Image (tube, rainbow, N blue to C red; front, side):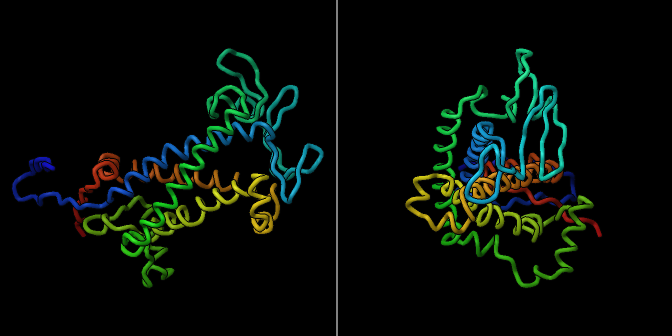
Length: 281
């Protein structure tokens, strides 16, 4: 494959270096996951609209106390977390659709798949892409282990566990002081911990709590109900994990924009990453 021509640089300036940062399986999984998780979130919000309340334990219905609820009064919309109630009129609980009609579903149509209420269609979308997520994650975890990605890129070295080292990376992130030169091609400790948390904790948690909510899987694997403390607890954990993934996604997007979106996105498309020049100390 032909390489692009090197950019013109001023006399005496150092030629920008490129490194092969992301291998093909990582790039494919990244973009497939971006689409998959978005569809799962939006179809999941449609399913949530059927009963916008969360409980702990095995059972939960309207008369039971919910630790989280999105609801509406005759005039307002609200979110309740425990005993704390927050008015969300116009956004959640009570909102106006594109035709100017007031609706009282928990999440508005622009945030759900499909846009009009249909629990059956929401479940179809959700179940299909749940299998895409589960199969893709399994294959990626196998490749991560046997392909060297875990050992080479995600393994946390002994010195990186030092509180001083972690605090140094936190300070650099807060000050928007991103790594330069060779260091920019490697994952820092915060990236490693967040990627490990997503790949090996949050995504498996989403899959197994989803399986726990299925009556068929509950009958086949009753130990899932014991692990998660009941079907309603699994539903609550599923909801919490979903929003933790949303938080990760938002932080990820912000970091990409601040670090240089062209270089970052190009590396996730082609695999090649241009090293930022070293700082002048």
